[in-house]
Image 1 (cartoon, rainbow, N blue to C red):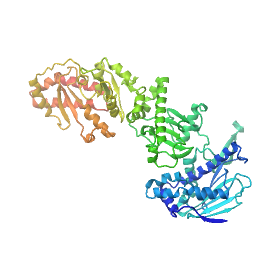
Image 2: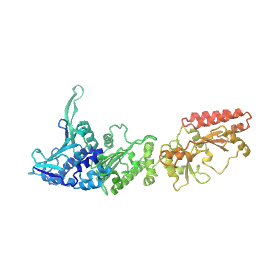
Image 3: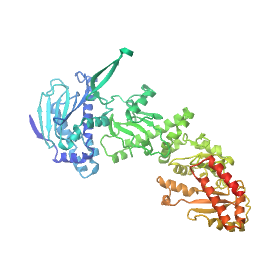
Image 4: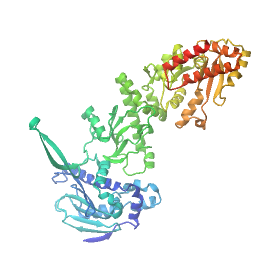
Length: 628
């Protein structure tokens, strides 16, 4: 038997470990089980290359809770350690970076995130244990067994021991009084499923009862038996070659990842790269409806099948955090801070590659079966639009497959759509005017006016469309977007011909103050326009610039302070409509005011976003009645 002092000049290393890891103290289980997996994998490798003569047998890792004795035990049947190896790897090398760790991170909040980077993973067990014991026996014949213990101070005990007869290592944690949650089976099972459910070596935690059925009909018999409860899948789908998987395998894997999700993903992207960096994974496109809350933290990051985090913000492009799935890379360090990851060159290359693979997959799906791609477009467009806005390289690629839907439900790429409207929707200044509506039914009256002119109208809805239009307008072509309710249709696509006004300038000057006197000037601006006599006498429009800036401000953009501006409307008065002439000629002031009020109220009703074609027809009939 020997005792000694761990070779570290900072005697307060254990309090520092506890301090830094307190917020993430559950990761001790990840560290210890990962070490057990490493020991098992090393034995497999040594056996394969002929450097170990040990019979592999059952290599299942055991995790056990003894509530009565207040212990948590992790045991493996891996390479094991001799007393000399424990002294080397536990007492010396594991603390080789301790002094550097203390110097660098004693006063920094993110020290916990990088503790494993300094070889301190094993010692994270002292966050929850008042004493830790190691029983180990090497895989090599003739080696003596070893016993090590430490109570959380730099002093340790190391001696030869035959207590463990079989190859491998058993670590016993004597759980301290303020960490008794780790003696609860439910808590340990949850942590194992969180961090270890895809590790490549079977992990047993207790037993479970299963029901087996034999025969059928009257001869059908059910028997129950107890079997080991293996909590992990040792060969997850992402660790296999795509050629070895069928469509159903991907769906089953998705159900493993998200057992509480009942909706299947639209399609998947399998990442499988070994040069110039290591990257495996499967990403799924979920169904995302417009205007719904966007769910992040659905991609899980693994390193060698060990769970690291589900918060990939800053590690992968922001828009890809809306996807679901798994990314696994040996080149992404397991225990480093997020700020370190964001600056890491390998991580940046991996991030760029993932973006490229996503774009290539979408392009392939679009070319392979455009009709199917169109049918899924509204479920994925928020992700794609987000990517187009946040990543210029993705924007360039997406221009080939991003779709735009007309109110007649036909789809086109932006290039195809501009070609489609070029002949009819080019204004007198050479601008291609893209008309759009946010609500097909709600803006029916405005859409109908555009269609009556032979124009096409896009349906553009969702939280990102204002930003996207701004970006598309910034291209090389002379393109501008105009919502159908932002002005009269003749003004939106101004042609060379001018409409003659039936009212003289003198009559207009007389009319304008009469109408202004009957509206709230803080909300409405009265605009007199010479429109076709078939157009409505009163029309309410929302100025494009004002509305778009307000929408962009609401989602983080636009001009400073625009989001707080009150809603402003134009009350467009058609000076060529008979009703307007009647109002001007009406001698009875009360009747004149009533005609203005009814006309404005009908215009407000037509602008109501909750109604469609039936309302449009009703308003038109009411205007006709007023004219009579």
